[in-house]
Length: 406
Ligand code: TMP
Ligand code: ZN
Image 1 (cartoon, protein in one colour):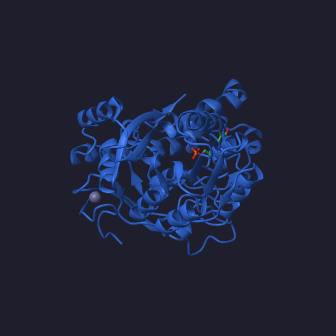
Image 2 (image 1 turned 180 degrees about the vertical axis):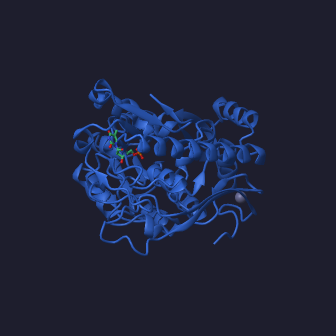
Image 3 (image 1 turned 90 degrees about the horizontal axis):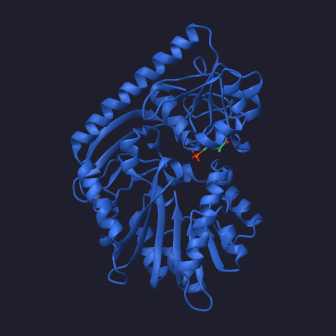
């Protein structure tokens, strides 16, 4: 399936192989653990356009369906962030008397619910029925579809042009990105903006956040590679801003070529990327060695604690937990369970490593000696909520950017 770059057709230079892995959000029923789906989790850079991407991919129907387990409204941090983002778009980007906002990958309506409350015409597009139903229950208009060229055209015919097309943690999941851009081209108003906020390659590198690498993240965007992608499809990257979710993302603003002036932020981040050698093969070879070290240290620590009779459990079952446990070979002998507040994940097993997911109440019943923090991007919120754990002598274990006991 490694047939070259999904954007320009260039050759992929593979630099990281994390072995056979399942689909990270493919939580499984304890009764159905045989014949589990696997693919080779490997990353490469395109020698033509510089985009870092998966070498092999998991079909999108296997990733997004009627039981998509990730609910974007699951944290206070996320809800506040998207309320602010909706407010910013409503304040700055709407034109005419009847503006229109489209969100690709609206999930449970975490952003569009604010747009709906403001009485602004909008439409969410998401392939997962269960999250679309949650969005509708919050007053959001949404359709269950994959966004592509055909859908962009039919939405324009039905609703007219959009002032804003938005995506958060979605655009980097879409392998058919050429078709997506044709759809955006059809739907977006001449003066409109295509805004998306996605995990940042620079953050993966700086935080050694190898657990951001999993099947749903088909592309690993950087400023240089997004600028090249925009240009290829007739757009221009006019603004970039660092945003705090998922450990540090970037919000990209694209406009039609020549429609807006390019902000200084773009040049500034491009210069930072060059200085960090973000596309140098040597940088990623070092990254591979560093994450090998993390794997060794973490598994050594867990084995030692286990041999000393300490109880260790995991906290949080984001997609990241699948990558870490499967890459490091952590199973339910080393980590009897992880707890997570998402109801639809509870009672199921982490894909591949088959560690049970229990409700947060299991955490305090009784508290373990150590807790491995998988949802590290929500650490402040979780540690505040679980302050009794540390007060009673418990310790948090972190593994990025290094293995550390707090
Ligand atoms: P994310 O890193 O992809 O946003 O996923 C975070 C996961 O952590 C999600 O499955 C929900 C879970 N979680 C908790 O279990 N408790 C919490 O307090 C928070 C904020 C998240
Ligand atoms: Zn390419």
